[in-house]
Amino acid sequence: MRTKSVKKNRINVVTLGCSKNVYDSEVLMGQLRANDKEVVHEEEGNIVVINTCGFIANAKEESVNTILEYVDKKQSGEVDKVFVTGCLSERYKPDLEKEIPNVDEYFGTSDLPNLLKALGADYKHELIGERLTTTPKNYAYLKIAEGCDRPCSFCAIPLMRGKHRSKPIEELVLESQKLASNGVKELILIAQDLTYYGLDLYKKRNLAELLKELAGVEGIEWIRLHYAFPTGFPMDVLEVMKKEPKICKYLDIPLQHISDPILKSMRRGTTKAKTTGLLKDFRQIVPDMAIRTTLIVGYPGETEDDFLTLKNWVSEMRFERLGCFTYSHEENTHAYKLEDDVQEEVKQQRANEIMELQSGISWQLNQEKIGKVFRCIIDRKEGNYFIGRTEYDSPDVDNEVLVDAKNFYVKIGEFVELEITDAADFDLYGKPVKQSVLD
Image (tube, helix red, strand yellow):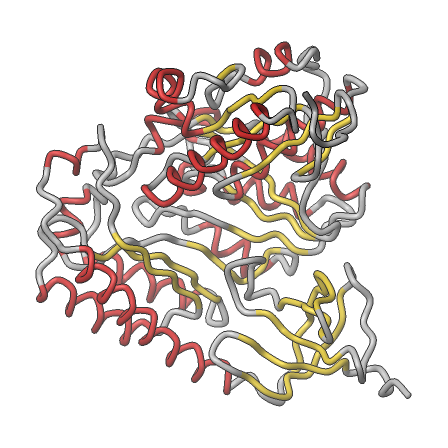
C-alpha cells in the first residue's frame, strides 16, 4: 500500500562517486528523455536508478547504504522499482544479488542498453553527445576515454571499467558543440587517464591535438584537465596550454606517493627523481600553472621514513592544490596480497599531517593573490555570497572566490573580473572591478 503520493513512471537517477559517474548518469538521463520518459536527478520518483561507486571502502559503504535506503522505500510502498548500476554492481553483482535481493535488477558499467530496456526505453545510437547535464549551466564534464591500462597495485578501476578506450576526436568536438549551444562555457576533461588518450585509436598520445580541436569550439572559453598520469605524460600538451588562452593553466595529476620503495610497490612506473623533474619541467614551461595532486598514505609497508620523505617533498613542491587519502585495502588488486600493516589511526594521523601542511602552503599562496585581479566564472549564490572560481580552480575540490552579495551583484554563469580583497586557507574574497557598490 502506497504511503506517499509519488508521480507514476517518474525515473529518479541517484548519482554516487566521481565525476565519471556524473557523466554516465547524464548520458542515461539524456537517453531516457529522448525516449519521452520523465526523468529527474535526485528528486522524487517512483522508479529509482542508483549509479554506484565501488572504488574504496567508504564509497562502497555509501553505495550499499543508499541501495538499502531505497529498498526500504520500495518495501514501504514509497517507490515501485529499484535498479542499481555503476561500479559497485559491476564489481560485486553476484554478492549484491545474494545479499540485497529486493533490488529489481543489477547492471554493470557497460550495460546501458540493457538498463534502458529494463526502464522501457531503447538505446539510441544517434544521440552521441546528447546528455541531460546535472552541473551548473556554465560547466560540464567531458569524458574523453573510458577504462585504464595502468597496473597500479592499489587500484580496482580496471576491474570495474575495463581497458582504456579513447573516444574519437570528432565525436568529442560534436559533443562539445552541443554543450556550448546549451550555454556551457567550461569543459572539464575527465578520464581514468588523460595521458593515455589516443594511443589506442591514433597509435600516439593525442591529447594535444584534441585540445587544439576543442579550443576551436565557439562558446567554450575554458578547458580544464583532470586525472593525468605522470608516466609518459605528453609534453606537447604544455605547449598548447601555454599558447591557447582557452586551456586553463591547471593540471590535475594524481601522484599518490614519492618514496621510491612505495612507488615501486605501487607499480607506478616512476621514481622520486623522475617525478620531481617532471614537475620542474611543468613549472619551467608554464610558470603560472596550478598543479593539483592527490596522495595516498598508509599503503602497506609505508614506514615512518617513507612518510617523512613524502611530507618533506610536499613542503618542497608547494602544490597549489592537494588532497590526501588513507589507503583502502581492495580485494582482487595486486596490493591485496600485501599485509595491510599500517594501523587505521596512524593512516588518519598521517593524512591529517599532510593536509595541515598543505593548509599552511595554500594560505601563503592565497595571501600573494590579495590585490590582484582574476577572471572568474560565477557558479552559484549561497547565503550572502556569490561563489566563483579562477582558472586555477576546479568545481567542488578547489578554492572558491566569495563575493559579498549584500554589496555587489554579479551574474551567475558569467565571467567577471574580480579583485581579491582577502584570503583564507582555501577561500578567496573578491569584489568586481567594473561595478559600483549596491545601494
